[in-house]
Length: 104
Image (cartoon, rainbow, N blue to C red):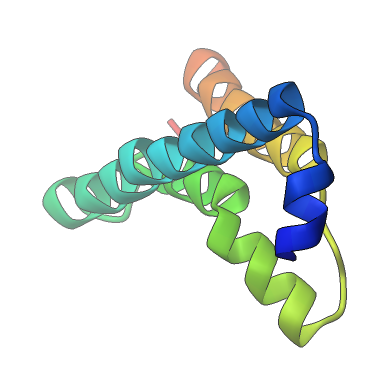
């Protein structure tokens, strides 16, 4: 972010942005890497073994948004990434509850 723009940004917006990015990185570390670790230790099947958590973490990760913006010129807002990550993790939880083949 440009230093002149950052200086004009209100303190509460800057704090909200920093907290949002910290939460996004934390979710990536917890869910993304945790899901990947679960896939490595438990195996790739059934698909609920870490896949939903891993993709949820990847969806919310700020690096994913940066890569999309840089290489596909598709800006993705924090709210859109959060909604996608939430939808992915809820779909995984629902698959565990319903036990639809081949997920459960």
